[in-house]
Image (cartoon, rainbow, N blue to C red; front, side, top):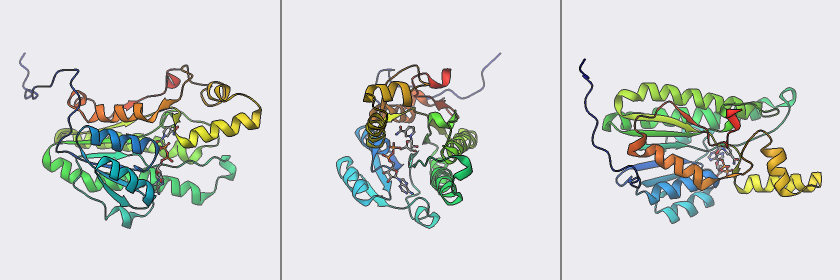
Length: 264
Ligand code: NAD
């Protein structure tokens, strides 16, 4: 039996660094936390990065370090999204927000806002950038999901619904992009060491009279075999790897960067 599919282009050695020279990336929520780490890692790999955030100071500061371009935009507003660059080779849908309340008390406005920022905006940005990726025959979409894209927790109805929606959207983009050289994947971290999470750890330690280490291992990471917060730089490294040549056959997947949480 002969294999009639075309031969793939030669690959660099397995240990070679990912080289994104000449590529343009657009990172949402790039002004802080995981998005900031993604911007810096993509720029270090050679990409020109558009940093999108509603926080003007954050976006500008990160763009300056990365030698990129800051765009101040509220991703809840489709008109603002329509002004963002369409010619991106790499799209990192990262911006997100959390709100915690019992389902019976969750406000409809907050629920809808979270869907707009975390599902509708990624959809609109895919619509905006896919024609360029398909035209050039190369594109990488990386969606920053969460362990909550794969598992549920109480009081996080909007967030869990949005992240599960993002996982589904990512798979559709993978299927539609496959014949055009476009991959679409999710990275799905457990708790990441960001200023927000560190603040939560301090507050809970004070509230419960326990150590910060016990809050991390017994409260936040109760369902995770690994009792350690992941660093934003580790998430960014996975994002860059997904943009590199050795990940070119990986699409429609979700990388669970969750210390084994979803293995249980
Ligand atoms: P963060 O709050 O540090 O950064 C989020 C960024 O998104 C901020 O700069 C914020 O200004 C921006 N943003 C929020 N709403 C926006 C809007 N409407 N328009 C434009 N920008 C907006 O948070 P983070 O922890 O870095 O989270 C980044 C992503 O990672 C989110 O999607 C989050 O759900 C996901 N995530 C975080 C964790 C964690 O433990 N921190 C774990 C899993 C997944």
